[in-house]
Image (cartoon, rainbow, N blue to C red; front, side, top):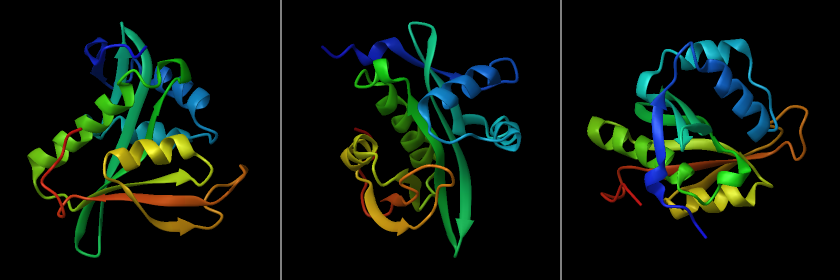
Length: 164
C-alpha cells in the first residue's frame, strides 16, 4: 500500500549533510560521482535537494542549468530514491520541486536527463511526467552495461501543465 506523500519533505544540501548524498548516490546509481560533482552541487541552491521520509534521507536530486543554442534547459544530473521508498511519492516530490522552479522562473525551455536504456522503471516514471525519449547516446556510460543512454526531455514550451 503506498504511503502518503505528506511524509516526504525536502531539505537543503549543505556541507554538513553532503556525505549523506554521497552514500545515497553510491547505493542508488551504478556510476560513481567524483569530488568535483559534490563540490559543484553545493553551489546550485534550490537545484539540489535531499528528500526525507520521516526524517531519514531516502532520496535526492541534483541539477544544473544548461544554456546552449539559445535555449535554457534544466539538466537533471541525478534524481534517485532508495528502493524500499519507491512508489511512496519521493520521486514525484523531487520532480515537482523542479517543475515549480522552472514554472516560477518562466525562462526554461525544457528539462532533460540521461537514463540507462535498460532502466525501464525510470523511463516509465519520467514518461508519466511528460518526458519523451529524444535521442540515444551510444557508449554514454563507462564501466557499466548497457553503456547506452536515452536522452529524456520534457519541453516546457509545449504545455502549460506543470505538476502531476
